[in-house]
Each structure stands twice: as C-alpha cells, then as structure tokens.
Image (tube, rainbow, N blue to C red):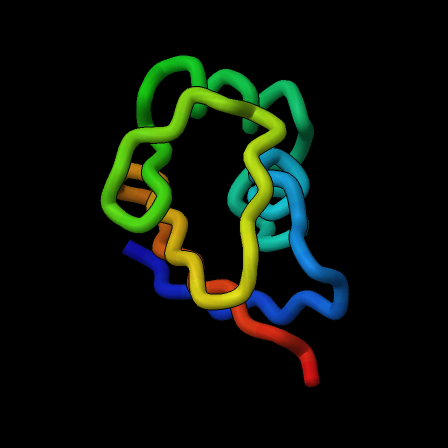
Length: 74
C-alpha cells in the first residue's frame, strides 16, 4: 500500500478531488466507483458520500492502493 501525504491550502477538499489530486485515480468517475464499491474509508470508517469534506488531520484509505494523510500547507 502506498502511503501519501497531501497538503491542502483550503479548509477542506472533497473526497473525489482528493483521490484525483493524490493520483490514486485518473478521473472523478473512477473515484465514484471506488467509493460506491465500499473500498474507501475515512479515519477507519467506510465512506459512501462522494462529496465528503476532508480536512487536515484526516486519513483516507483506499483498499490495497493507498493511505492518504491530509495536512495543512501552512
């Protein structure tokens, strides 16, 4: 599993945008599929909301692909 750190300069980033920004998926459609299939978790809990707001300190896991830690850019 690839461990990634993503820095954001805004208050939050949506889950689909985070997956694209981190390079885990190439498109929003791919992100939606992973979420719908139950392969994405936020801080250890399954996520089904595609537009979920992800904030600094959150950890998103995509089953067997990546673990993304979100940090403030500042």
